[in-house]
Image (tube, rainbow, N blue to C red; front, side):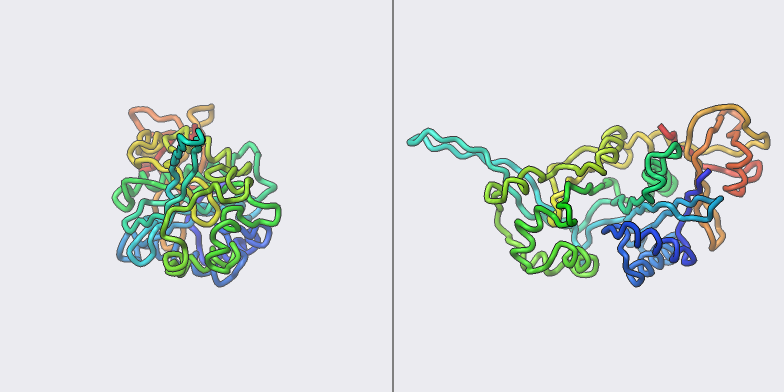
Length: 341
């Protein structure tokens, strides 16, 4: 069984190992950046960041038997403020027709937009390659745990939730859209711009064109990938659509990846959220596949969750012995549940 929990400062070596293997935008291979991500998450889980909308929560998935961190995911309570706006391209279509030469064209147009009162964002999903596509479904566990946590702490989050998905990238990791737009207007590489934007978004507002951009002017490949989902992200797209997310005709201004959004209270997993008291008996037979979570007051592991079979009735929730041990549960403890469907 795998354990989902809040990140700890002692997890830095494990995250460094993952980052060295993957070096993604979500988990940069940069010790200083990782330390900052961990520090903000620890303070967020502890409630030491006074404004709840400034908090960022990093979850880790641990292979307890091998003492190995095998994945991460994140919730950003609000993506888009006056200090750091949520920036995107609105995607629309314009039609032009000339009667004199009988020519008709449909053009995809990008219009830069800013949101200063943005939605909650889910992101940071990373899974160690050897664990992908296993029966434990680590990616799905890391995806679902964010909705479990939001349901457990609904008042801490916005009414809309955003997921930015990665598009197809070039073999060397560059972005087709960035090469067509961003690089020409900033003089930065895709990686340089993404790293800089974590701390400073002013350069985007000042250097990007404020007028509409006709994608017809881009190379054919750049046009083809606008708003498309990369091959490694299609499973995430299907999962999001299944639980209530939809493409909102917006894309990331750096890589052109699509933005999917939903009303938090309409997400099926959150609608099916419930709580129950733990029963003393141990579950020995198959039951409903669920994600079970609990909050703790302890400074270490303020949040824990596992995927396991659960039987819920009028008396409470019956869990396997191993799940109760991992969550450090006793009879009568209140747990939170969402289906793992």
